[in-house]
Amino acid sequence: MDPASQDINLNSPNKGLVVDHSDSLSDVPVEGAVGNSTNPLQPGLTEEEAEELRTELTKVEEEINTLRQVLSAKERHAAELKRKLGLSPLNEFRQNLTKSWQDVQTSNAYKKTQETLSQAGQKTSAALTTVGTVISKKLGDMRNSATFKSFEDKMGNLKYKVVGPKGNGEAVSSPTDTTPTQENPPF
Image (cartoon, rainbow, N blue to C red; front, side, top):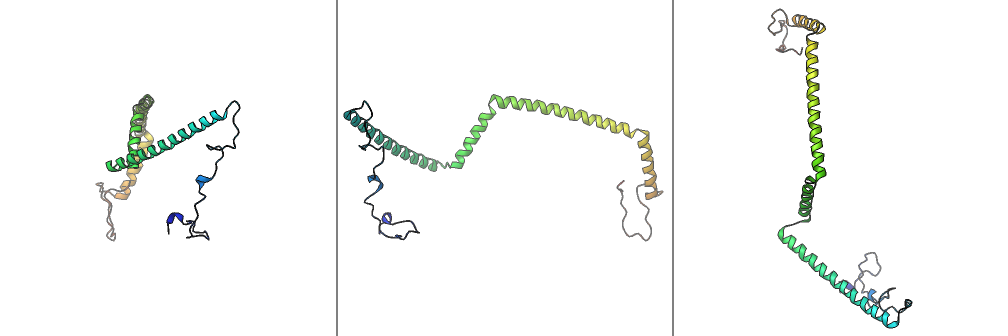
């Protein structure tokens, strides 16, 4: 059985039966098609002129179909050449993307934007450096202040009480203490 003559709709009750193609779509008249004499002639157009126009229309439509066939053949040939060259759609996309990015980078707008952002980055860096310097100076001033020195003395006294009279950083441990002491306490 010829597969082209079978009904391919799997839900059809005629599944697998031979289908009669004698009344194919090419025999169905289409409104506005060449040779359709039901259309009235345009005003000022004789029957001979209308026939010439129909003939010319037929030729143009044949040329269009020929060009479509040629274009299709060229597209298949191009696809075959690309396959032989190892070019895939993904590779083409990558190449197009790379080329587009290079075009963007060479544009004047990109260069001006890059220059502006570079200047802004330099100014921001300079401002942050200035802020860091000011904070460092303020911390130095604070460390030399009487309040901080008083706090530092209190912490030293606390350390002495925790570490003991040795003063070399080793904590005094009791004979019952089994845990090792820290050499550098967290304060």
